Length: 120
Image (cartoon, helix red, strand yellow):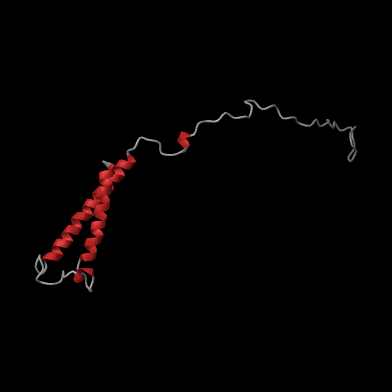
């Protein structure tokens, strides 16, 4: 189903681009090269402009709907959303309880020594 929507999306996008380039604008554009400005065309004097603009609108709507469909399908997936979820937890080499930190023994000063004197 998703592949079909992708095909419709790409085909409608390419078709919209081609139809926009074929339309007759203010200057001499690609539409004038194919005779869209002549009154003796297949659709009449203004029939081709109406036909091309309506077809462009319909294909733009198809493109919009297929894009929304792809967005809906991609948001409703139940599979993993990242590589972090697939990582197996590794056993740590650090022991569960770290040994207590050894603090240096500082002799109590009890006021017996004078300033600048090193206790023994």
